[in-house]
Image 1: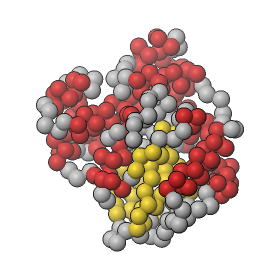
Image 2: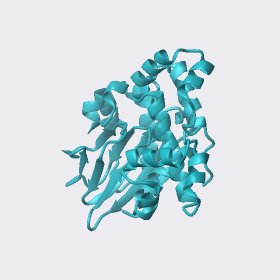
Image 3: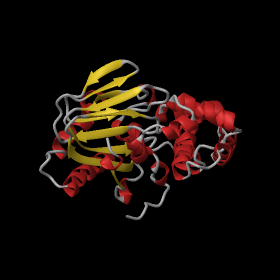
Image 4: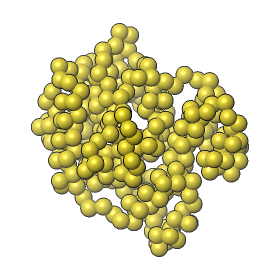
Length: 290
């Protein structure tokens, strides 16, 4: 899998409370492609408009075949996740905001961790709508695939659950700080007890505020590592809000099963495309210029 396989596309402003970005790819494969998913803090829906034969995934040793067009992928933390595309990489995926799986699809946080399932199983009502919206195949243009996806999300948004202002504010604070924020400080500023915040946040997002913040913190580190892989790791750790380099190293090992030096020496081309610029997207950011 090459670095340029996924094109990052910013959704319309009206949809950005629900979708952070689209990831688009449209090419056939000669020898297949395998990549390992890493934690992002977000969930995804995918429309596979190409050849579906032979695709599969493995999560913590549990294999599943992808034999349907529309799939939902939930939050992962330290899960061991592998995806294999046998014949084509032809899909458009929506990276949902931290609360969109709950508001758009009605999937609570309790059901999202490590979930990889056909959209029909995860959210039957959304799957019915997907059948109406996604009708084009490989012959369609990039813009036509984006148009279908915008229509799908727009129609879901029309019937979305109301937002929880406490959880939305907590998410915004964590994202603005790139995860370098204490739950106690956040609770105090919002004016809510930590236990109450944890309960509401977990129910909707699927992670505790602390776990969500740590994943975003790690993603920020990845961006720093890719931006300047010759910088001193201790400086990167400090800039990213870790106490010291040892704290930083332990976090990298937990999420990636590699320390920062090993990570930089490994070949993660798809991860660079998929994750490294992730913090530039979302409802509270200014879309990057083309």
